[in-house]
Every structure is written in structure tokens, then in C-alpha cells.
Image (tube, rainbow, N blue to C red; front, side, top):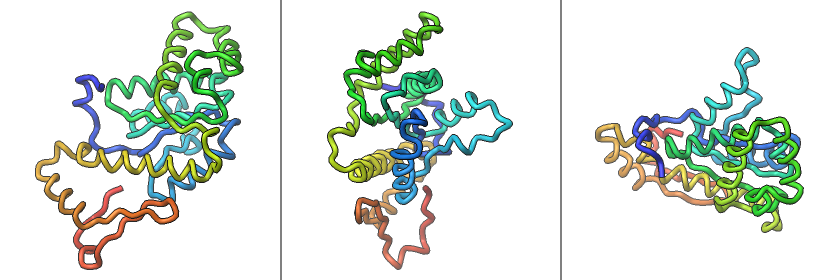
Length: 227
């Protein structure tokens, strides 16, 4: 449950989704396909390639996490080899507690139990990362890994088709974003009535795994659609 500080939560978001991942494991494969599906469905996702070279990367990533409605953690074999990824994970759970950020998980060729308990090959990699770190750093990383593994998510090995899994993830993200639209605008006086009227005119349909908004011809000029 979000803390009372969630009352200061921004009502608009720069990004719909932030993804935390180990680049060499998934950047040119799984993440590329996920980004393409999100783009097709109109879901904005933060891209760390867009960080200005003049900015301090750690600060830019922290800011991006806090400006995203949903964080998706892609847990792969070498995720725990990066102290950067582990620090992102800690920040994501801060946002979950402080501002009610939605956290989703994808287990990509890694067993959730190994992530939770830091065992197996995943655990061995985590141990190496912790060798030069303080006890406090190790403890906060271990707690974050335990917490993220306890979130039910998509398991790569449970799907016969990666493309189908990606379609399901995108559909799930779209549904979560749709259910929070009223909440995002809750402080805007009179907006709820307009949202209800818009919902009555919008028909949601899925076509080849993509979400489509079907708007009656007579209403297309009457409403502005916000991402």
C-alpha cells in the first residue's frame, strides 16, 4: 500500500513505462520486440539511449523511474551482475511504497525462486557483485530481489511463443493504465463526468493482440484523446 506521501503524486506522467533490465541479456532481442509492441499499442516507454550525454546518468535514470506510471523489471540470468540494475530495483520499490507506482515482473530464462533466494547461477552472480560492497548495500539489494520475485509475473518458460507473451504483457499494461486514468485526474474538478462520457463513446477492441480505440464518426471531432 502506498504511504500517505502518495498525496503529492504527480497527476501526469512523462512515461507510461520504465523498464529495468540487463542490457547484454535482452536489449537487442526481447526488449526490442517489447518496445515495438508497446509503440504499436501507443504505450510510451523510457529509453535510456535518449539520456543527454551532459547529464549524470544515475540521476537521469532515477528521475525517469519516478516519472513513470509502471516499472517493468526484466529479470534475466545476469541481472544481478550489475550494481546499476540492483540500485534501479531499490529505487523502483521506493516509488512503489512512496507514490504507488505499479511494478510488474518478467522472468526471462531465470527461475523466480533463484531470484527470491539468490541461489543457483543467479545467486552466484549476485555473490560476485556483492564482494566489494558493504553489508548495508548487500542487504538492501537482497531485500529488493526477494520483493520483486514475490510479484507474480510472466515466466518466459511458460510460453511457447515469445511474441504471444509480449502481446499479453502489452495487453496487461494497457489494462492497468486504463484503470488508473480516473485516478490520475482525480484532482481536476469536473473531469470525471467528461471521462465517463468519453468511455461511453469509446469501444475497446483487440485486433491481432493490439488494443484499438474505435470512436464513432460523429464524436471524433468532439474529444481530444490524451495518451
